Image 1: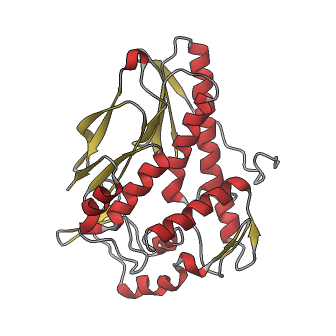
Image 2 (image 1 turned 135 degrees about the vertical axis):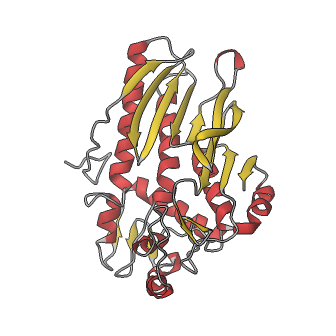
Length: 308
């Protein structure tokens, strides 16, 4: 049933949650958004840690249920099914659409939440199966933020077009969960969803959180360890989603103007920023700049790490 807090009426299922004691922290682990997720809480009270971990898992699954393009009952599915009719969205979705509009403008069209329709042609499954140029070209008329009408709170998509907020969802969920914990306790925490993470502040006695950046050639092997006092890290790359054809690797980040993977991009980009959303957007935008990824990042004044 719909509620004022969740006007879409999508109830997030409970996540199987494992809670264990780590070095000075309680660690809650679960799966959401096709990723391994964990929350670390520097708490002594096991019951409080378990309650907060359950709340984090529930919030992650709520966001996934609401914005997943794979669910027929999600907000995204309902928007995309409107087929040209104006569709009124709630305040949370409006905020994400406002962000998408700003990112499209600031990136000069490189970041485009309508480009998800290109997945009809592309399957980044590690194989050598590339779509034909005709297949990709046929989808380009359905891509372009400038083709839709966003007049808050109403969004009008031309028939056949779709939006996909997958490029924002996981990072948004991380930030939401850190804020959720901070509203309940001053205890330091770390929230990590599939390698995109944020911390509420330093650990006891000012100690940093030790986090790892994976090696894109060997996804399970850390390439570098970093000490994080506050803020967030997000990584974008092609370690898991790519095609390989005649020795050439095609990463999953697509140029919305051409419909083809960006050429010359680094294998992996990690960015540090105040929020996970900010870090994730800059990591993605860096990849969308291809060979100019480092030039782009240097101009932002943020800390970053590139792996070629």
